[in-house]
Amino acid sequence: MREGVRAVRDIAPKAFLFETVEGFLHSRHSDYVAFLLREFSKAGYSAEIHRINARDYGVAQDRSRIMLVGLRKGLAGSVRMPRKFPEFHTNVGIALADLMGEKGWSGAEAWLKSMRDRDYRSDTIRGYQGSAREGEAIRSDKQQLRYAPPAKAAPTDEEASKTGFVPGLTNEMRARLQGFPDDWHFVGGIGAVADQIGNAVVPAVGQAMGLAMSSAVKGWEIDWDAMMGRTGTVRKTVVPPSIELKWNGAKVVKNLTENA
Image 1 (spheres, rainbow, N blue to C red):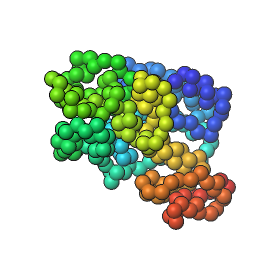
Image 2 (cartoon, helix red, strand yellow):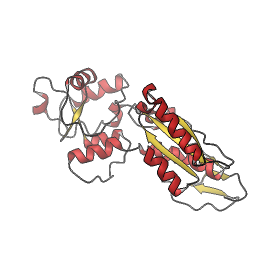
Image 3 (cartoon, one colour):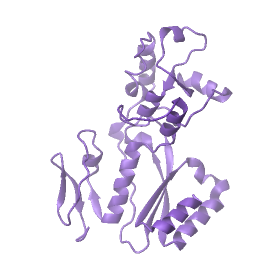
């Protein structure tokens, strides 16, 4: 994060946003966090720390993250965190219904029903883990889902016949639980792709935070239902001053300032 301070000083943006893990706020890091906030303040920014969870933005994953946001001092706005979307709630069974059974595993339907009945969301999707350690194996048995190592393919009946079988997540499944569209192209071997997926910001969270930052910098009022809705495509649009931006016939953003 020290490099983040340096980058902000060098680039001098109107605003900045950094995402990091929950451990950032552990008590043993309190002095370091205070140091960073002081450094951002010296650089001319008012910085704040917020929590956000991907489960509130339509992914079947319980993924809590820390957002460190800052605005250049003197800007009139403030960063208001995006609204949550409980109506987007989903679970692993719904998310992986087709992928888990694509190799003909006869137990897929019962497994998916169990996921739906428990309304289970996955634990945080992480980067590549080469082998399942003891704690990971216990978690797999309890949750009926193996996170590590990434599976090379969806389960088959032959695989399921082995003692101790627990269905594993392929990178395709991991990407879907992370909120990537199915046609998103990753480059590299199984480990490199697992790292790309596990270390990525959930796309919907990135979109929501981007809108929140735009609102703070530009003075826009965000129509969250239109911008975060699951139908249509949000296109890159230049917003002229003092008019409304239209998207699929719905009002998206109203410019609240005379000069955008």
